[in-house]
Image (cartoon, rainbow, N blue to C red; front, side):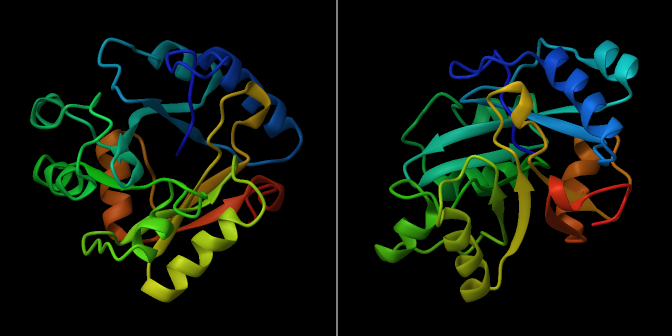
Length: 214
């Protein structure tokens, strides 16, 4: 649900390296069905990973991670219309406007690593900001430091929010560290949006997902 390839400016992993590493994880008994590439401040309309996905039997979907004045947001179901409505490169965009625009264009935007010190949604709420449209946040983030996922968990409990899990991978071996277990099959980005709206999911650690058990 949260990964970066070399298309992002701070990642060294290729998509092929990710899907190959997933074969290693599967041989170790882990269940990993697919990944979502959430490149920074952009959406790669021009990139097609269907051949790689088919070759390695790994679902590869695309999303975005955008910078806003209230922290980072993961966006799923990105369309041309949404990128025209919102400037994905604008690091000072209003997160509330982004969430509303996403829903108008059949997408969904939700806070990434809300417990991250200094840039997480938790800090902005503590400063008195309110975000009525937030119903789901990234509860488990594989790149978080000690205490940050715990802050996200507390945010979910105090505001009655649902949580997803994402690895926030920038290196090959970090993919799938945290994942999201959905109750419905997902094959497309639209399926992913519908599954999130359906609220039948839970965040999981890779270490706890072995042979389909979580």
